[in-house]
Length: 267
Image (spheres, rainbow, N blue to C red):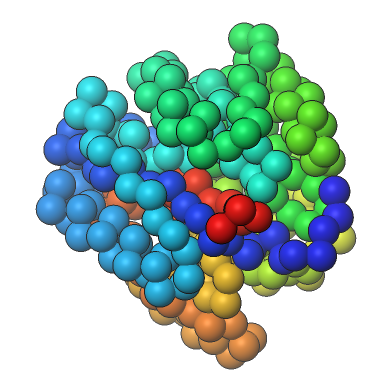
């Protein structure tokens, strides 16, 4: 689906307040537990940056039973045309979907359920101008990706299934959209050939987690722990907003997973 509006133009987001249990969030490698206070401070700064970028923020209450529920992008994805309820690939996160469903049904006229029994996480979904890229990973299997393609088709969105590098949690762990023609990517993901039709900006070696940046309207939010990436993007002319991600990074998270973002034509 081609559109005149940039895919990074948003006027609405949904976030969820971190729970005290967030310190027990899932992680692929143990770099120590985050502190609740640290996660909350990073989340508060994220909300403030979003408001500065010009979006309306809907804040959902904390869910103590679900440590990872701050990461609202995994159980659902949203577009101007509607929302899709997903089935997360981590067993402990599957019941987050019915928790966010009432909010999405209240805010979107069209809400689709992922059919079948496959798994798909929003962290594996990158929306570009021409198509929605779905990365196969430990959290998104082929059955789930194909079911998601069927849902996207109902919303009028083209899609494609691509590979995520081995050992990488989510497709968007290693990439993000800088503008309609340009992708920020790790060297390992760029080698896959997934971004051959894009201009590619490659993350400096050693700063791979910076690949999960987030373009929102006029700004690119980037983890503040990655100075070489920030300098590189600044020199390329992007308006960079450094964001602290040290604590959420301890539970395999980045900037994109903390919000559901869309452009509403009714605002």
